[in-house]
Image (cartoon, rainbow, N blue to C red; front, top):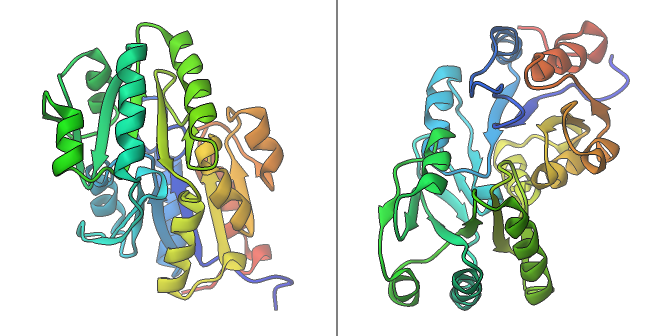
Length: 281
């Protein structure tokens, strides 16, 4: 009998974690995850992106449990059905959008499986390059939020001036302290605003409830601050080698980088190793 519960669930962030710099899953990592799944271990993904960015991976790995999207504001069934939603308050969204307009930031609304913005520019092209769907264009974005659009989260971008993104994050943090949370996740060109108390960690709690798996039977992988809450909840929280220092300090284990089979290496170490009590088929 193993000296601790076996791992029954693997949860991996996408960009910078499961996906390498070419936005692909490396063969070694894919093989490791597939071998774990063949032994009955559940696998899913957790991303700051929309549901459409996960569909290829859902099909590729045969994921059968919910996926975490939009940094935990949405949990989808594998077929796209929304199982849990934690949208940001409309008045907060409008207030932040007005701030963004004054600061020269590009606003992108995340609503369900859609991106909504005023115009397609190089900022939006960067999102699409990272697997997001083509955006819906609405010129009167603030008016649409007032009347019909219910945002899950909002991102603000300026790929031409990365320092302005840092300044805008500070402005958001000061304005929305105690009301909503501003965070950086993934691309250096953006900062986002999501509801207070919502994270990939709270979405993970929902998945644990519906699957009957405990946190003590879970391994979670991430590379940025938006992954911290699920890394903290897991029995084994794994940070990628290239993650910021504060993320690596919080993790139970620091693996190799996403370009060096980091997820696959840790799956071998903590899930496939006989010494860690993996269930045999």
